[in-house]
Length: 414
Ligand code: ATP
Ligand code: MG
Image (cartoon, rainbow, N blue to C red; front, top):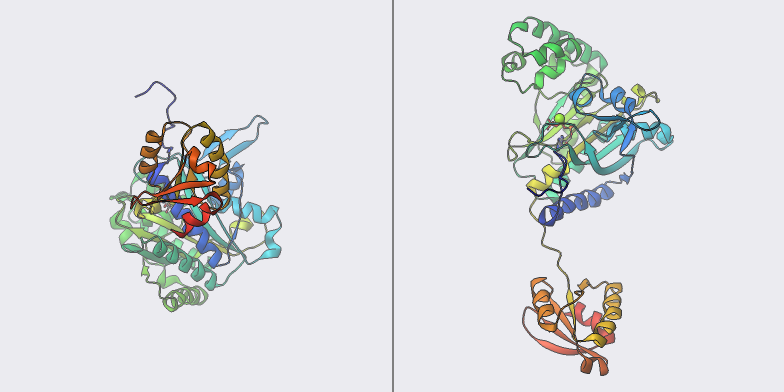
């Protein structure tokens, strides 16, 4: 290992083909969010710590163990965003976006969680995020799910990924279900893990999706929400599933899928694959009708999802290397100086081209071939004197002289 500075554990230097895949995921998301009329927003990488602790909830792993929290020089407690939703809800309140409701927004970027790094799990990772703020319609949930499905299909990774869907009901439903769950788990206290015993008081729903094998028998035999669904909650869920069916989206009911926080309502979902080992959730979200209010804003029903860009990129095929159209090969000093103008003109005309900073003709031709460029544009003093350049097709080996003014045209045409 070199003695120089090292990358911080859980962070990544993304380059080469991996960077291309990463960009392909972002580009697909950007294209599709426009098709669905989602506007792009940018929010800060850090917020007041309370923005996350109040909205994500003190009892979650994210807030209790995973946040990067620090005091700045002014003595304020700040936190690097562990997700986008909380900051977007804060912005909804502070920027007065209520007037724009229902507001469809999309963003992406780095998020930070202090987790144990492993494949598909980092301390700085990147998310795509799509949210609809200010709508209580099940059609909003459907639209977000159809968007997610189209993204996975566009990336060519929908194969082997399943949409798992659940409902967490409305407030009435949830209170009744929660009481039944607490009663059930109380009677299985002796079988539960320490983590789940702690959850029993604060966050009993979370026991349902515990990954600890000791919890599974009690979690699997716990009552489903179905018996407790109010008429409204049942109707809402039926509209979501009918919408998915109408859009031709396959889904599976997973009655054990939960989001722990009190303000989560109705729809909860995950797109899951078995191709990434333990890190199989690529995209997850749900409806969070009480979140904006929990942050001190007006009552604002909302729904959204986030997806890990790294996990999507691991599944996606590498895009064809972009490559350049032409390599410029000047022969001699006079030609080199003329080539500076020429390469600038070609790039302004939209031709991807490159010129090495030094080297003789032979070296430059070798590099042109290695670069994957389709053409070498060779500039010698004689050609320049005639106002021409030699254009060599590096695949076929054909070569022809072309007037300088027609170079961009010629490269494009061939
Ligand atoms: P997990 O169960 O994998 O910890 P989570 O429930 O914490 O996921 P969310 O908060 O719902 O995940 O985040 C949405 C998505 O972000 C996940 O589905 C996953 O694709 C990605 N993700 C979450 N944590 C990480 C991480 N530490 N490194 C890379 N990607 C992550
Ligand atoms: Mg997590």
